[in-house]
Figure (tube, helix red, strand yellow):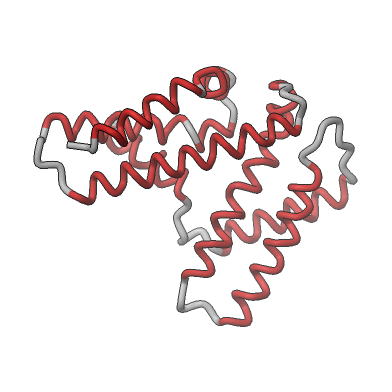
Length: 184
């Protein structure tokens, strides 16, 4: 069984952020990939643990990881929302760029963990990721006007990095695949 205190913290957190969570789901925001599937998976893991009292440590660890991941994502989205003057429509407009930041922040951490990448290549790619992150983080503001050529270059670099490291699974994708494989 999942630790009841941990599960209650999860439920309380979801309830506290119900408006944002519902909005992301109902608007079919790309940011829901970092929230909705995680919530579904956590409910499912808890259900499994209730049906099998001898839930193993691995399920509880995944649950804990998922709760932490959900918390980090929602808090980051709330920071961006405040930066965007709590304008949900503006959040929608900037959602893809926020997705880019989420993906690259995680990819950067994962690349750093991989030992079989040449150190010079790793450092070069992390530097490129940092430059892309800086551009997008600085431009997630109300009424920003992008230089289209600069935006295209950074987006191309983003897609190049995602493609180059497509064998490194990102957490949001792993939760989406988990939900799909169990029909949740």
